[in-house]
Amino acid sequence: MAAEMISERSEKLKMVFISGPSSSGKTTTTIKIEERLKKKGYSFATVNVDHYFFDLEEHPKDEFGDYDFETPQALDLQLINEHLLKLSEGKEVKIPFYDFKEGKRYLDRTPMKLKKNEIILIDSLHGLYPAFSKDIPNDVKFKLFLEPILQMKDKNNKYIQWTDIRLMRRMLRDSIHRAYNPLQTLEHWHYVRASELRNIIPYAKSADFIINSAMPYELSLYKSKLYSQFKEWKEKFKDNILKKDAFVRAERVANFMEEIVEVEDDSPVPKDSVLREFIGGSSLKY
View 1 (cartoon, rainbow, N blue to C red):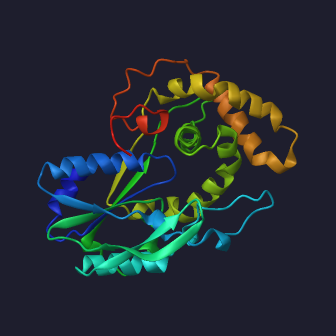
View 2: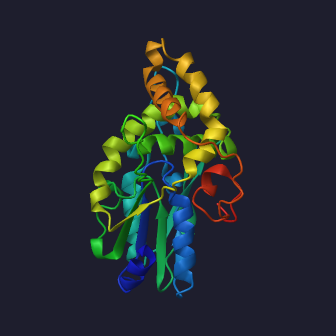
């Protein structure tokens, strides 16, 4: 449906923003939309906004020495907006390069200019944040928003929180691709949640289309991979005032996951499923 809507607006369209909170499935969705529209004859260029991070030394730390990469202010929004505007006008820009090992950004590295009938695809947490593209007319941009909108209740008739689904997704992805263990992800999640409530969720209503990325069976897969750890964290943090957020999340997840039927075999999950972005084994190239 989203691909069809983009196709219908292709005459004026210059860029597609695929946005949503952490671990909502943006990367897989970006790839699939690109694949479908390429079959219709469209061509695409991608802009990796990670290259617009400010130098690491400019990032504030908390009392635990943890950096906050989740806020849009960690990105050079002014430069992003300037480059996107120039690209939409057919001008050339030089994309910066961010070296994550050094924590340093190098400006004016990669020349980029849109070809005729080429559309920019942007996969970003903050694609709907107003300052991200404030000077770009609405008729040249299409905005997608993703969230795993799972309508499932626990034994107490309370809905399972979507943020908990995304937390487990990110734990699995971080452990596979980012050398981050699940506990580190849990302890960092308060940054993720605080930032998305301020800077992502409020702008969902500005999207042209919303995609529900939840799968009804995904919790069963996560139980075999994470449930025992959540039970341990529930006990580990219950009397730690400084880790209250981690305790509340661990307790909540451990309690509802107790009721979930565990499934260890993930082979029935399609190789191009959005879940493969988090559990591994995808046929797509990320």
